[in-house]
Length: 134
Image (tube, rainbow, N blue to C red; front, side, top):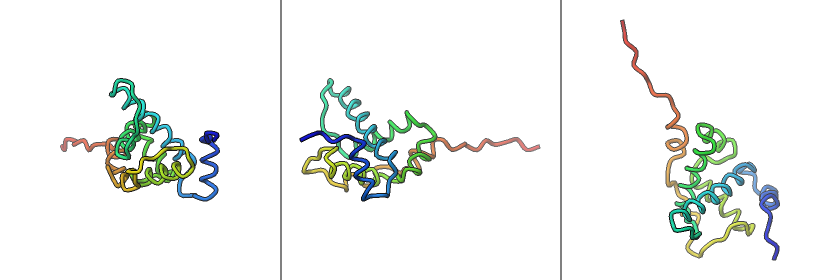
């Protein structure tokens, strides 16, 4: 069996699923690669299966590293607004054969591990500075 190309898989998904823009799929793929590498560094170079919670934390770290304050805007534009959206993308990739899955993996593994607002927007909001009254 030929390995499926990422672009081909995304094009196939987009033919039947329009909730997420192409950028969302590339982001999740990049975040998975980032997470696998980060976990391998912590595990003497050994690569292993990534849980939903680990992927969400990796996506957070990757997006903030790559896009900083634009993370929230980009993800919103691409249709990602909560953790479960990432899970939906993961399971669409699984259906296409892009990602593998263990029997214990479920969409519920992606149930709101964190708030997108708190993680991607709040750190970049300006803080109020008190001004002297006079």
